[in-house]
Image (cartoon, rainbow, N blue to C red):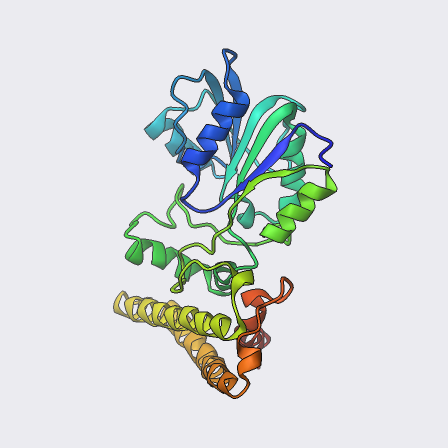
Length: 311
């Protein structure tokens, strides 16, 4: 049973801003001025709260991103540069606490969640957007070098300022709480109810359709895993060629090592997927909650572990 009036809404990439806006209007709409904390505000604000009076406070550990937010958008009533884990936050103060794609970059994300919850007033609303760390997207973003993420943003997503001061992407951490299961457990331990949840695998290094992992059969999971692995190998090869062209020999060599590390287990997984044809009953067996597609990507994780250990 829910014992708190404070809810947590967990949202997925680029899908739910309109739905979340409706929730805010329904839950918090009225004549009073809303006090909103944008935790890890960066340079963007995508909500349309037109007609609702609100006071927006921006908090970010990246002082350059915060400066660009103030200079370019000018939508913050207050702003503060500081570490989400330590910056002073007034208890029970905000009507709405919002954080979008920040916590996967924080070492100590559960502490930050607790602090954001504590700064929420008793009837407030907390909206958290995170990628699911248990998804293929979460797994692959953890194991690929950060510089690959930067070059992906620059050359694939065509964001030339990616990786420069004030601009993401930022290195990822993915604490255990950064997943659907993790955030659900966190909310349950505090007698909170997740008001709406829709986790997606994301976009980077993702080639397969957005099918929930738990809905997959074994053969489907392996085939989708192979699609993602092939996509990742092509991406690494592209980044390596681009790096060589630009004279970045260090990154080009790193990409060549990653490609070499991933090719052998990818071939083994391909043979395993084909081999399921010999055991059709197993091939169509659904994945259990504890297995998910991340479990079937263990072959890729083992290759990564061997590379890090120098074997």
